[in-house]
Amino acid sequence: MKMLTLALATAAILLSAVGAQANPARDAIVAGFVAQAKAENPGFDGFSATRGEIFFKANQVGGKPETPSCTSCHGATPFTPGQTRAGKVIDPMAVSKTQDRYTDPKKVDKWFRRNCNSVLGRECTAEEKGDYLTFMISR
Amino acid sequence: MGLALPYIFKDERHLNRSLTPCSVYFYYLSHLIEKGPHYVSEKQEKVHPVKVWDLPTRIFHWSLVALVAIGLITGFLSPEWWMGVHLWAGYGTVLLVVFRLVWGIFGSEYSRLETFTFTPREVIAHIRELFFLRPTHYIGHNPAGALMIFALIFILAGITISGLLVLGGEENQGPLAGAANYQVGDMAADIHEALTFILMVLIAFHIVGVFTEIHLSGENLVRSMIDGIKRVPDAIKPPIHRDARPLAAITTMVSFAMLAGSLLWLFSTMPPSGLIAMAVNEDFQRECGDCHEVYHPSLLPRASWTTLMAGLDDHFGEDASLEPDTAIVITAHLATYGSESWDTEAANRFRTVSPDAPIQISATPYWLRKHDDIGEATFKRKGVGGKSHCKACHRDAESGRFDDQKIKIPNE
Image (tube, rainbow over all chains, first blue to last red; front, side, top):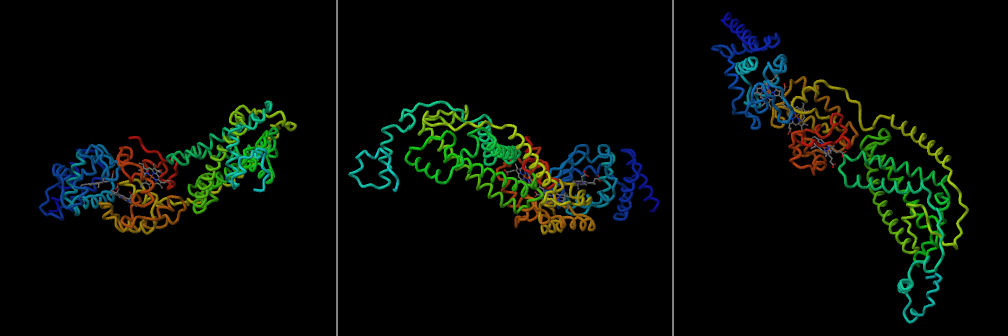
């Protein structure tokens, strides 16, 4: 079991390294979600960029009516800039476009907490967060 | 009436009627109209040209007309971001009025104040003559005109001084920014406005007076103020002409400018009374600038900020929650620098919030009133990006000043 976790973590890190520049801080954040996902769901079998993409673009229910989707504020694709509801531009979410994305664990935690609550009306699961990150890191 | 009736009342027409002051005046006027009112032409007097108004006095007069017109138009009609022009008209008026007083000492004969300083008795006599449409001919200003000039100078001085107080007290600008607080500025604003109305009444009287005089004397006073020349009846002997002393005038003007300049400079070294030094708070700048511009703490009262900070998990339909320790730091910062701590116009006004939306600046009564005539379409422009985007139109929003001169609505 422990071996499997380690292998998955390594795989995830390797995967992220393929899509974009490796960054130790970012890798640590992803590794943290791997461990969390494992703890939440014993059947966890790795993050998926495809699931991340679907999650990012989907219209969700349960959140605030103003923000049905991640793309309510973020650009429709990972490469396009978005806009907050108050009108401020948000840089693209893909790591290849905005290099310093997902490198500050506090910032990542804060925005997952807020945005998931706004869009889904609940905390995101570690798997959703990891899928999303995997998707953005691969772009 | 106690007045000696002029010769025309030798005319017997009135004798059969009851003699009230009103009817006397009426008969008198009808008589004048038969005879023609121009006393110069009526008496068939010979006239000769006299150079009355020297060039500086004429330039003064028409510059003042232009500046007062600009001041009135920018003050009453224009959008507030014309304030810069209004201020320059004001500063220009001060210089002109001071120049006129100096020139009233060193100018040529008829520009000198003493030549048109009359005793109350002379003024009353003149008004009595005017009443009977038979005024004595004066070469320079007549007593009524002179009274008007002193009144205008007095009112203009009052308007410019109260204007500087408004500027310093309400807007925290100009030389009195440090000396006048908001309350003083607010009071001065009422005085400034009242004096402006008096000024307009005086101007109306002045114009009516000039045209009455033109009608009575046949002398085109407007042209005199352009070419400086009046036609004076030969019977009137002009006084010995004293020439202007330009050097003395310039010396006095320059020393006045230096004295007033250094005094104003001294005043302006005082920091603006409405603005306090605010410590930069990194947490506030970062956390409250993620989704929109960072609003200046002076734009809402303390109670509103506390309410806002307590409800961040549903902040205008969004979760803007913070780590508890960060929230505490920011709440303390906002409570320290809420609108109660400032004396700017904005801070004074935004202390009154909307009861329904106490945490929304753009819902306060003052905000709504000030942005009343900006259309919805304007707020939707790309360059504006909504009512909450103060910085788009107020280029000094970050400082909390919200100066009129710093307003510029993006065109698209």
